[in-house]
Image 1 (tube, chains in turn red, brown):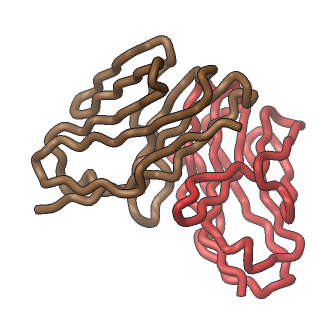
Image 2 (spheres, one colour):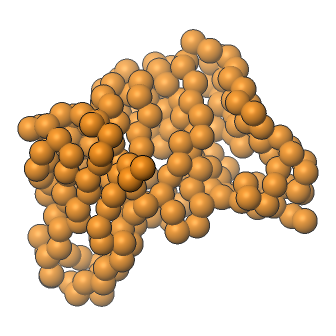
Length: 114
Length: 112
């Protein structure tokens, strides 16, 4: 019953360092998403992948890149971390991207940039 | 653009009913979701409703949708300490290519 698995759970980086957040789902879902959660702001979509082989920008893509490695895995990369990227990052997946299937979430990665 | 609004806090006594409200601006909503987030955890899907429905009930949870007023609510009957969490509403809209638009979350505080 793994669902959506994110690694690592916690990370501290220095400004300018790079890092890749990993996400994998075992539900055979087509669509995957990366969000960031900041206090009092709900979730904001960074990037999403409607299906294997495609990626699209969300609301706040600047400073991030993504790779849909295969149907199961969707990674998020910070090339040069900045303190403004301190946040909790959530990966989610859904059967389709048409809004008629619920998204299932991982437990999050808590990232601090010093 | 689309906007989804929630009150940031709600305090209720254990055993009472909790009603968490959500309002939205876009009339082209399709599906409306309620998620629960416990401290340090991810978001757990509680329930969802299609926009052509007015009500959905699932054990202690009742979702009401008033399309005319663009108002969505989640009622939790017999609130327990385990219901302490942040509750998010999220909605998919045709005009946003069906991407989910999220409220900021309502923190439910249970008083003994």
